[in-house]
Length: 268
Image (cartoon, rainbow, N blue to C red; front, side):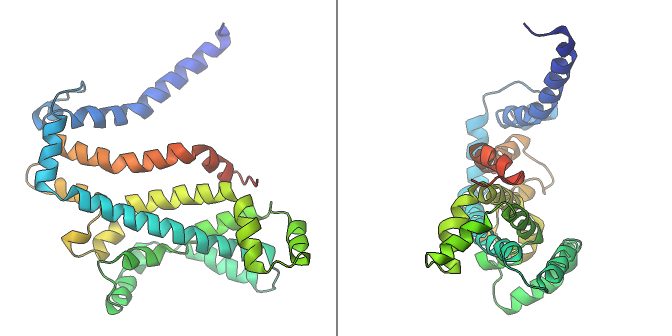
């Protein structure tokens, strides 16, 4: 039996859960209705999902945009977590009088807004002929101060005695990193992977700058184009938003336990 003193708490949690889930429910229900029904506030499910999906395929290159987003997000995630974990590993487990000063400079970089660096980055990548390419998308985000800080903070729980024992057994530094550090820091890798994948998948401003050809557009750019005309087909738009939302939700739900452990600094 639920204690009476907990009833207000449960009521509050139910209300909060309702407001949290309702936008997702409305997105799904809107994807099954016509524009007229959505504009009139209909929140029940309709029978227009297939029609809206067919209209989306007929008017926009959905699969190309999905493929581009997956390619950019996966490549950026894999390379970023390897590079940032190497940096965090080095900053925490190796000793040098200049490393703290260098790390302070990296943290200062977090205070620079992204828009302040877009024009120089665009000119640099344009001169390197990397526009409309996966490298143009991922290079500015391969090494982020936040991920380096995350790996450095969690590396404080890594047993240093294990490194000394490994060196005695004949392992070099890269073997220690690959065979010992990476398996022990799986939770941190999962958390960094979730964060990086979501940021890359949902990125809009930088791809809008660097991707000048329609063939290179991502899902957020596709959805922005769908709502940029004189009239908006809200049913079709919500189908596009649904396709854009599902991958990040799947990644988070699969790795949510490891994500929580990684954020709290767990080391296996």
